[in-house]
Image 1: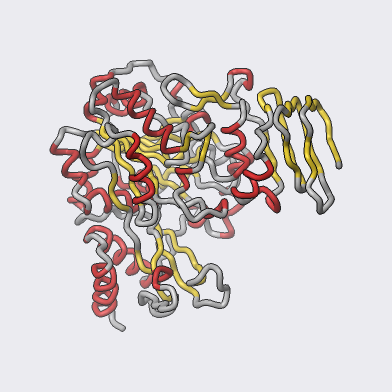
Image 2 (image 1 turned 30 degrees about the vertical axis):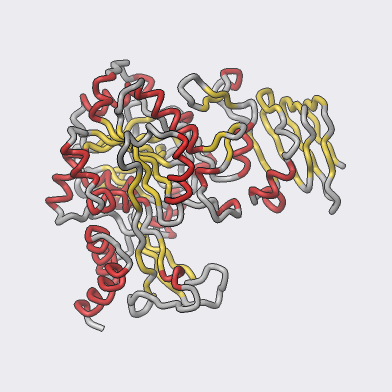
Length: 465
């Protein structure tokens, strides 16, 4: 099939599903890149490591609440808790008591507003998260300012690895589609009309972050730093540690000196050692981003409505539950990749407290425990007694990976971990209320029958049932 006919086939499928024009244009561009043999790879020789960056704790504190009137906050809320065995909105998972991610996000914004209507607040939902999210947030009637509270992330077709045609799967048509990655933020903003609406209201600054990262709150000092610096784009980064070796990192492209984000999928196999060298590539993207909206609009207009984001090509099976199903390509882009699209782009090193996503039940256990406390402005912060070092939590993935199992084992209560440096559980172990762990503690149950840790204090011990 020639390119024109293929474009028409893809465009017809996407348009019939209600996908907006900017996303269609971005996807066609990605397909053309794949057809041309582009891999999206960033070889080590094409980039230079970044030796140092400014740090937030060294920036002069110049908060200004007036700038809040020009700010919009967006939380990426398109994900389901599939990694924890859920098929519902991840942000509806309970975090503290009965409060969910959505409760904390709503209260943080309402506190920041102080009886005003600014900053503007939106969620980028997906078709699968929108209804449940909006229904739940009905308990905060002032959150949307009486108007729009969300806009939709788009979906794109999975394509055949050989023909590049959109695949057909009549037994489950929903599997013909996949999310385009959070790089869809920009075409979704444009296609929904929200970008133009915000600019018309005098909103010039955008702060965007993931909904599962409650550390990503609006920092007025950061907002002032971004505004005063005349930047188009600012990425919050954190220093990589041993646990971040496989995550993406920031670098500088040798050809033009621009900052670039290199994800693991963009690293050639022969460069993996350099990619994982945390002394060489020191900084990772927290996915907390600041964007100058009028500059974004100018760049979109200059590029015909499509930012030239780096391609991320994923080879998958059409039905993830059926390994024998046809091989397909899922084409994605990362929101942070837009850093290379702006000449006036920067990065700033932030404390690890601004990056506390919940990817596993171990992360969730930390937030539910006394390791974290709730501030007056509804932030979750690590207790000062930990001196910036959270407890290392290791839960046996065979028994604790799924949220339902996790909830069962900790149904009676969560152990006290504020004085615990290392907490490890192997095998089926229930916890009674009132368990206190200190220093280094491990519970090991090699038996098929579940065991229970009774109330008590456990200090520097390994308990084997």
